[in-house]
Image 1 (cartoon, one colour):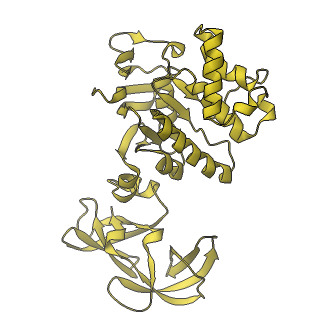
Image 2: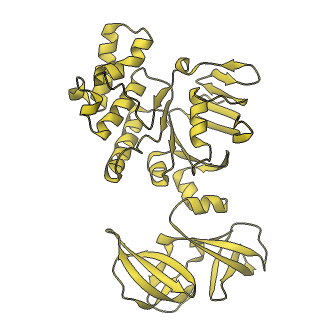
Image 3: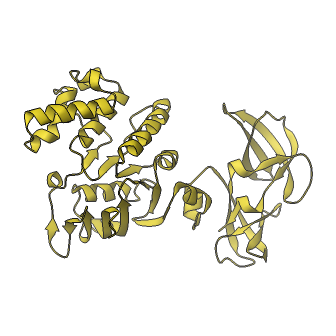
Length: 355
């Protein structure tokens, strides 16, 4: 573990009965870093977070925080959740309904037998940092969803934990408030230099908030990297398909040249793309095409195909075009409405991944 590593998870395994949920997961969180655990339902992301928090019981592996081992199956070490000194923000916020905002935030300090004067000082500072100073005497039912979320975060931060764990922290907010909240939360994390591990199923949320993303699939880490790496350099079909908005075309490789493969789809389309697997000529493959990287062209040319445009859909900041190529449907984005009819669509080979 390096000096900058604040949280280290090594080969963590956990099963429910005969059902393995985590299959030897290893990861690190550095000081001042935000790492998102991303993945579909059942991938193990929430279980991993809860195992770090001490709310789930692994059967193998170890967890170390700030150089202190809090769990080690081989050594028989298992520090209780309340003694791990982690900040926890739950999906439900878990606020005491009969306690004021001040008392909710003060609760972790009272548990730790902190003096009244210091409690008042630290709670007021936490509420001020999160824009809640004027709400100290209100009760949770008197707050909006966004305000309740901030109270939950203030409670997690009030005793300066080395790591803050957030489980779907924005999922209870409506779509517009989620976008505002993720910008606010990212800004808070950067300003306070927090070390945070965040569970989310929302890839936009993960990319916006994170320094690094761990994409879990079936209890293992499929790939990890910066948001840019995860989006632009997928190592497997699962990663390419999970990240972004995609067209997925099934076809067969007909040619291979200089790291690129030509894929024939349903005997109608021929696309060149980057070969991201060891599939050979004649083998069936899947071509992944990012929707935003397909372009309408003004006429025939290299890597352009004539296709029938069925409709244009207005999405506010852009239009989405739906094309037919026989039984194949393709989506692309553009800036203006287009009438139905034949159009030329450009497929840049660097925007097509062949798995």
